[in-house]
Length: 388
Ligand SMILES: [Zn+2]
Image (cartoon, rainbow, N blue to C red; front, side, top):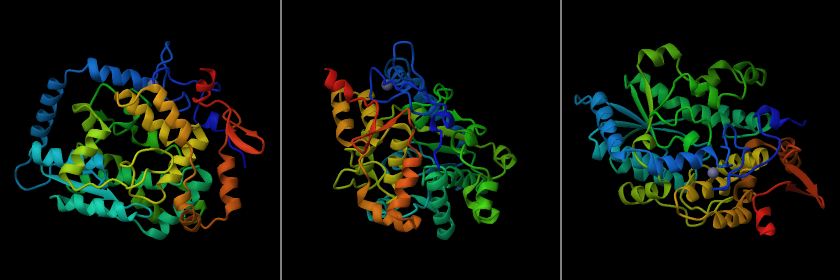
């Protein structure tokens, strides 16, 4: 079965790359200005020059004061997998701003040893924590279906990961949920929330639930009860709780590398000893063996792999220049996640042929062509290198 990715995600038919970073206009919801600069780059510029960070600090203090309870109850929910970002936010809120956070993790599909160790270290650094673990059989079934029908094995995980903090917030009468970075803004996406600290509750489904309705899953043998752990609490309960979802990146300059240094120093975070497949970094997204396939499928669907996202962010942060970024994309983007391929096939109960046929069904003609029998991007950013 061939799908029309271009139509599905409303992607421009002509691929264009940002003049400043490495991202293309194929990233869903990203926008480019008249000078060919992407929304994330413009936002990064604005972060450096257009924001009064002292005023933001005062806003954060005021937000904490508004929600601080001082009576032993939790006053903020922090989603944290034990990775560098959530660890940074949790630690800052608790130890710098005097909040009483309840940290929440949605269990990985297949945890890595390093991921589990980082989570343990994080909790041991002094946090109350709850782990949401849905029925592994259901999770596995949902992952299999999502790989085949949504082109992203990670979608059900993302549903659960997004909704679990909302549930814990409602259950514990905690109105404030604090995320780390606003990915839509930092990596390029919808800019409607770029200039405010919160995500509207109503946006919740719009960004991440474009996949399939409950009926679709039921048709494939997943009951409503099976799905429940992955779904949001009723909207009225969320509203009655006066739930507010905030991003720490609104209040502090968000720099992934600085989060890493902070987490290493304060919460026992350990990076990988080798780089993650598909990119050159050693410290992001380490906790799930299935992770690499989420990034790989994004590369197939949008031509945007993990190295593109990482280099684009680092160019905006001034860590590397665009030429270096392009060279890194050429070297690593779209690298096949071979390390856990056997694990993934076993988890999804598929053969090599089935894997290939699912992957190929997500290749769109406007991005891909066969050259000498091998799939190749029709237009890659490193083509610019050859042109000088
Ligand atoms: Zn850009």
